[in-house]
Structure formats: structure tokens, C-alpha cells
Length: 159
Image 1: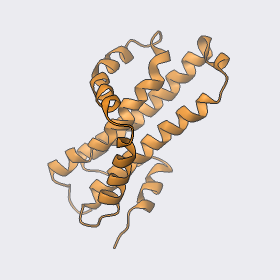
Image 2: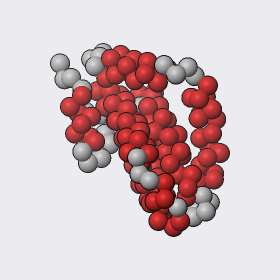
Image 3: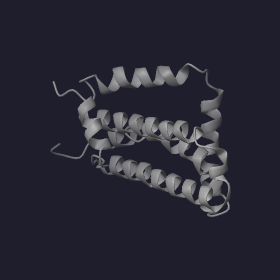
Image 4: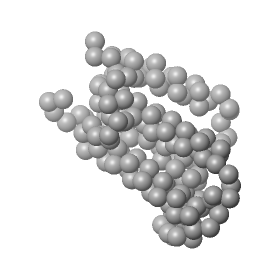
């Protein structure tokens, strides 16, 4: 990339990060008693979660395939936008895998201070990764998240 993308491409590149940003809240609920900042964060994401919850069950699958086949694998879109779309989709997959794996852990692990501090660490780390990706998209840069950026570059065809 030789120059910074136009502002509308930079704003459009932030849209795929709304899903992982809102899903982070589901895993941050146990940290209420530790940081009141999360209460303000819930107020910001709650309308988006209501909207996603009111959509049909097949919508998220259609969103994933539509974004992947229509944007990421399509050479007519700028490489910058395609990179951020696939990065947002991979972040969403990561948060869903974390939730699925943690459903297998016995509930007794999440009681007390250990569980609260564990979810606090996971949710804040993930929150700041997503916010850093949004910052990079708004600045017209590629996000450099270890392992994730390489996986994002592998998904985008160069021809």
C-alpha cells in the first residue's frame, strides 16, 4: 500500500469488528464487581446485541458466507478492506471458540475470585485486541496481531 486509503474505506473496514466487540461483553459479565467500566460498555453494546438476537438463526451463517465469498475472495474490493473483514471474522471465530471450550469446564472453576479474574483478563485482553484493530483500520494501517494477521493474509488472494 503506497498511500492511505480513502476515509470511507477506513470507516467501512471497522464494521466487521462490531460482532467480536459486542460478543466480548458476554464473557465480561463476571467481571462486574471488579471494574465498573464494563457497566458503561454494556450500555454501548446492548442495542447491537438486541438487534443480533432478533435476527433469524440462519443470519449469522449467511453473514459469514456472504462476507467471505462476496468481499474477502473478491478482487474488486481493496486489499485493505478485505484484510480487515477477514480479521474481524477470525476474531469472531476466536471468541466463539473460547466460549465453546469454556462451556466444557466445570462451573465450580468460575466461582470465586479465580473465575472473576480469569474472565476479567480474557475479556480485557480480547477487548483491547479488537480496539487496536479498529484503531489500525481508522488510521489506514493493517493490524499486526501475532498469528492472526498471518492467517488473515493467507485468506486473501492476490490475483
